[in-house]
Image 1 (cartoon, rainbow, N blue to C red):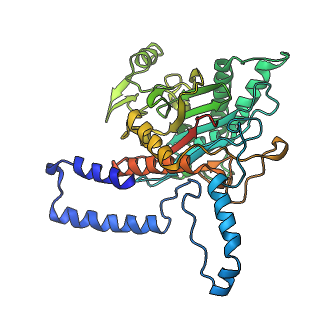
Image 2: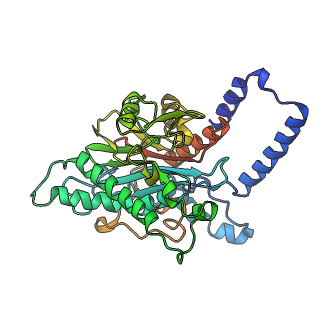
Image 3: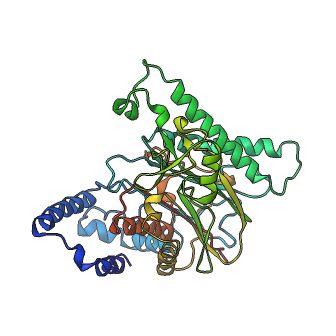
Length: 416
């Protein structure tokens, strides 16, 4: 599949765009350096272990002694991954969601994206298990995106508990209110952190570049809460969530661009202006009209999210969350086709992993501590979803995306 995409990209390049001999030599050198960096792990893909390294060589006697055991383990692993499949698994009461994640710096000098995946993040919910997925695309610096990565799910939980307090068995909380309050608190924390910085604290990267400008930093936020019966998406910025249903892409969020008619009207009503400087920008600075942080552009840039609540159906196949590094160069239709192709090549959906008593394990060392992805042990990712997320990131790079690329793919197929 990756080879087909590369071939298509090569065919689609116009002949007039061919570089000169000197430029071609320079490009070839850079490509060789990039190839070496990829081979050596220079691009920090945060996907699960798609292709684990081969085991070290063994002597023939030791290999023969363990041959039958290896065959049994191989058959068990091929059937169910780390756990044995059980009928009715999936987004059930004691199961991890099937997901895959990739986050890569790409052609940017700094990595400013962050991803948060929190399985079963609403303990004690009467309406089944809910799983949190978030993609945060920082601008100006990475500290607001990292704050969202660490805190957003906790603030959503707090807002959820307050919304359902005093109710014996709430069928569905007011998710719009929950998400709006969670985003507002996150924005307040980011803004107050920037305002309360003291000279005695260690300098953030943005302060080293431009002193006393931590309030010139922000982050988009697209968050999905996947439950047994519905998918709730809250978005602030130009990251995006797309649901693939029976092969048809269904956008669950709309990008907040300054020249979007309703956003342009809102900005002008608040006394702001949209200036076209390498695209539409708020006050000629920010290329999105909503974000967490960016205190110096308020009230023109707001953190208030748009929230959609979508009922799940048997035709649902996957949910894709990604930063604009993907969506700038890949359409919704292409993204869904790539995921569906990976699903077909990997066969029926795997059931996930059972957890005794419904208790999730502590992430392994190097899992939740990853600077780009937090909240999960990446080894638990589903192979089909991880393949799809990785392939989408590679496709974005092949199409010359100039931004960080972060992709989360969630398998919504029902397990029979």
